[in-house]
Image 1 (cartoon, rainbow, N blue to C red):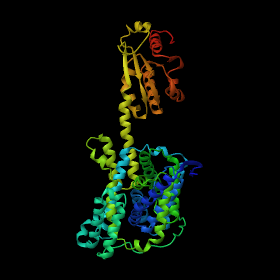
Image 2 (tube, helix red, strand yellow; image 1 turned 90 degrees about the vertical axis):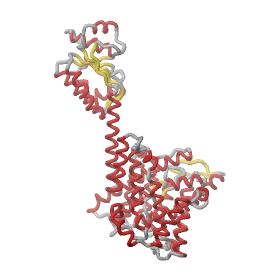
Image 3 (tube, rainbow, N blue to C red; image 1 turned 120 degrees about the vertical axis):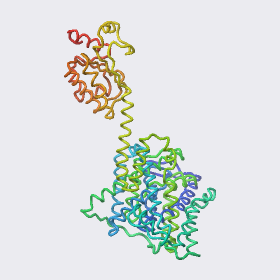
Image 4 (spheres, one colour; image 1 turned 180 degrees about the vertical axis):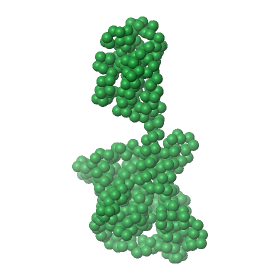
Length: 555
């Protein structure tokens, strides 16, 4: 009888012998890839190599069991490590507070999932995501330059690393540099076919470790690694630090959510399945909560490990959970060997990881991409590297919003047309109305509104139509082809109606329906027009406007 893997109270597809075998191969292969990266990310964060391992175990297991992407493998990632590195640097005097931030970030992710916010992550503009991820890649490269040359990491983040570069020639460790170059070379030149058996990060780690053990013992190494099961971290929050703690937790939660759901989309594309975004956020949140409790790094869906898992045969959450259990077994017996790993070997691995995170595909298209989107991408990238991550995302989203609003304004204003009647091409009018218009000499202004109108075009709407509605005796607002009008656009229309009335013109409304009618009625905009001047179609409205101009009561 086939096994059945339960998740979220429902039964997933049955596990056949073939899929079980694929999950075992996928989990083992993903663990082999994850091991050197977990060690490297742990060292890069400042929390230690073992923190990277425990983070990979906790997030990898719980995100697989409770998440919503079948074949996803989770663990520490470059972006999450950069954020955690800043947290560890700020709270180096009290690491319990740093891991409390990881727990809070996990709780926020659980809240995002329960509030069904997962679908909104996909609304993040690509230019913001591209700039942010490229900035993360640049940061990883900059902060790994000092360990690559056998020197301790420079304080002050990317700018601190750049400031320390002039001292490199006089102080570098030649043995560490040789190990770093060899590890980086393996990462770059490792054959793709060989990577199916031995992944490039593991090969680079092995080469660097052997060089350090056999010939180049003078290179700085990881050093003592705690052994055995981790100790539980008691959450600690200092009231004075609460605003900064919540801000850092929010950054971790948002970044982890975006990172994971983007990886889920990649997993969907190669497995031809569909992930459950809200459940994925809950699973990632549980994983990060567990990671913080055992002193591990926060994590997210890891693209490279997920792709490796799928290509090795992993198709269900069992593969992700198995990858974490394999890492647990390694963590309990790996201490003596991990202590001898040179920092330069890990730096060589991370330099290639940082290079791969940079969105080179988009950068190559910058010359042909829209200028406003390029500006958003470069602003986000610059702020990510030289200011901080939350500022980069916030400003990137704001600037992207402005760029989108400008585009929306141009597109929406294409649906605005002011016609002085009589004029050809205004659409079908009754024979009687056409006859009545023949002697009007443009006394009636027909304002045709087609499509949708929003806050983006509201100001331009009043500017472009101000002269048309104040320089005539009657105005007909034609909503025959208006699909949607939001609050801002409705208030702009009211402003036009009031301006026309002050100029002595009468206003009529034609063919109002749907959401446009609901918005204008709900906001009381039609009160300024009057119920007798709201008509079912354009012809009736024009005829009524002409009749009122001649002194007859409106229809």
